[in-house]
Structures are given as structure tokens and as C-alpha cells.
Image 1 (spheres, one colour):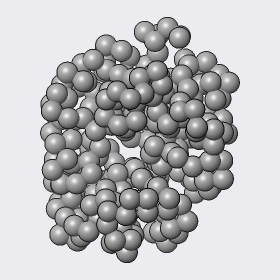
Image 2 (cartoon, one colour):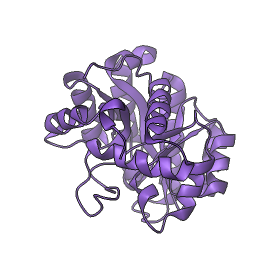
Image 3 (tube, helix red, strand yellow):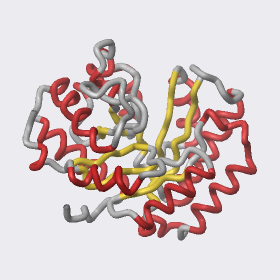
Image 4 (cartoon, helix red, strand yellow):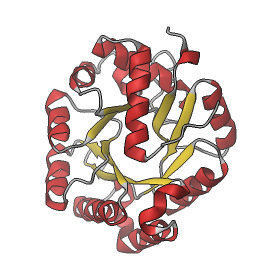
Amino acid sequence: MSDTLAEVWVDSHCHLWEDGAELVAEAHRDGVAWVVDIGTDVERSVAALDRSRTLPGVAATVGLHPHDADEGPATLEVLEQLIADAGAAGVRGTGLVAVGECGLDYYYEHSDRDAQREAFAAQIAMAHRYELALVIHSRDAWEDTFDVLDAEGVPPGTVFHCFTGGPDEARAALERGASVSFSGIVSFRDAAEVRDAAALVPADRYLVETDAPYLAPVPKRGKQNRPSWVRFVGEAVAAARGVSTAQVAAETTANAQRIFGLDDLPAR
């Protein structure tokens, strides 16, 4: 393992919970300068915004997960009001950095597919309107995900989170100007295609994340994931790319700073 104290990380996608202050403090001690706390519905978006205003090194997103897309236009209106209240085009100064996670999930299909596509398109429009990054969830829905993006236009700073595709899907995302974020899945034994994708993305177009509390990476697999474990994801990505962990830390931190507007890393 490399000298983690010499590395600075950004966990570009996690879901903080009740002991968020403790989790963030632990992450800072382990070299994680920023965590991006992801909204998936109104309640979680409000909580993420609150944490971004009270906890150092926390940024927030506002979004409606495809699992909950059946909530429909009324919920989307509330979410857009949250964004508007944060300051319209000046939202990045408030801790809000992106719309999402949003997208399509045809694996579980907890929501009707038409409702998912409509909610996804609406949130892409919000990202354009408020000049925010876009965080995408896509599972077993690559063709439709790209079709909706193409129809709506890909916002600058679009990120495919928890990337589960292979080289073909990675290239399709990159061709559209998006970036790709790797989770603990990249460390799983049966994820060779994800590692192949990690090997080919350009140095300025990839991120690392925990998706905590889900998908703990090797060697923590099976445990409740934590933002402080993002370095293990970075180690797996480094092995796939044939570079040092320190290089992955530097590249992914710079990319997250640029995409999410994290211009001033806090002192640790």
C-alpha cells in the first residue's frame, strides 16, 4: 500500500447517514479532502444540502433516483425549488454542485420505464438551466440512457457514477464528453470488464467513489462501506491502469475539483 498520508482523495459519490459528522471526520483523517453527498429524493437531498452547509469538506447534490421516478412531476418541482433557493446560477457557492443521481435502472425497475425516462430528461434540463454537473445512474439501460442524453444534450460535468459497463460503454460515455466514476466494483474478482474500462479512460476523465454505505471495496467487501475507504477503490483503479496509487489520487482529485467546482481543498 502506498503512503496514504501523502495522497489527497475525493469521494465523488457517497450517501452519508445519521453519523455523517463522524464519517466525514474519519475520512479527513484518512486523506479524503472532500466527499460528495448524493441526493436521491427530496428528504435525502435536503439532508445532503444541510450537511454541505455544516460539515467541512462536504458538497451536495439534489436529485431523484430512477427507483423513485414514479413520484413524478410534483417531486421534481420540489427538487428544482431546492436548487433555485440555493441561488440559481450561483449555487456552487452554497455547497450544491450537481443534479442527480438520476438516470435509468432497468435491472430492478422499481419505477415505470417511461416515468424514469421523463424524470431523467427533466433533471438533465435542470443541470443545463442551473449550470450544474449531472450525476447519472445507469443499470441495464445503456441504450436508452444515451438516447435520452443525446436528445436533451449532455451537460458539461456529466458523470456516470458507479460505472458497471465495459470498454464499449466507457467509450460511448467519453465520446459524449462525460466522465466515468469507478466504485468498489472495480476491485471485485468478476469485474474484469470494469477494470478494462478503467484502463482506457483518459487521465482527465475519471473519478473514484465509494457509493457508501454500499459496495465496500476489497479488502473490506461485505462490510458497510465508508467514505474513508475510497483509497482502496483508488488502489484497484491504479492496478488496472498500471500506475501508482498516488497518481490516481492526484488525477481523480483534480478531476473532481474541476467537475464539481471544489476549488479550495480544506486543510487537514
